[in-house]
Length: 346
Ligand code: FE
Image 1 (tube, rainbow, N blue to C red):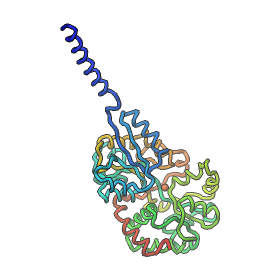
Image 2 (image 1 turned 60 degrees about the vertical axis):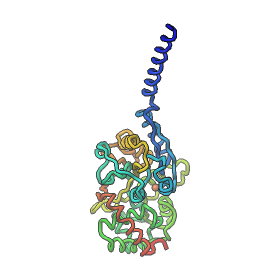
Image 3 (image 1 turned 45 degrees about the horizontal axis):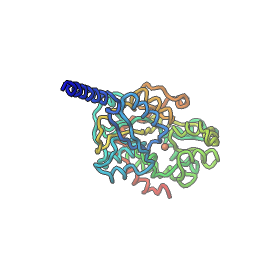
Image 4 (image 1 turned 90 degrees about the horizontal axis):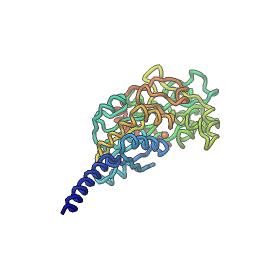
């Protein structure tokens, strides 16, 4: 009788102790499932830090392509709580397809400038890149090219290279021109740029700098971080030569500023771990993550006051187009139509 009473108390105590231990263990903080089209090398170290800080486990699925199709097919059964992707075009398309849900967070509103987030919190920018002009150091004289408009001017006939006019980066750039100057002016620009091309649009942004290096053209459109990726490329050192052949022009400094774009994040409509997803995005917008996230890919932090990678800093300060990216994104359909109208890729 005495023995049984003793064991019952002991068992109850152990039960409480076990419950307490489970509650205190990091595992109870739960998890968050992330679909990312951003490369693992960029964000894995940050996800590890996030888990250390919060106890929240991050399960990341890297999807180089097809994220939107996958989320659509999975519907509300999707395991994804949050997405990470690059370019306003992709963020906007996920939002328009009804795959993201609104988020309110004073942390995100404080860390992320208003032009780099969706007005209803469907997506948030986390890193910034500028779409600049890479010009040959000698063949393009100082002051010869200072704006996107210069690329469409007759003086650049046969001297410009670019990737496809239908690629998200170029569609977003054209959308920013529509937002700034209207449809007609944007169509004229696209027509003028096409008339100046040294070759049919092809390859990626780096391939254009290679073409400048090889003398095929004198000026090319490209995103800033590619300069860093080429100039510091130990795997393919020939890219250092491509980078060394050009200098960066931040266009339209006397006017609306250089077109910038973002990589960003959103919480999915299907999220089962919504609070954890918000915490993860908040973490990525904070000083610690911002520095590492931007540095690793030679991008600009979205949060003000975060130090730049020394090479990025060496490119100098520039004035960015202040247009709200959510508004610019609304012009993407028109931009795509213009690219077709002017037969940009033909
Ligand atoms: Fe890119």
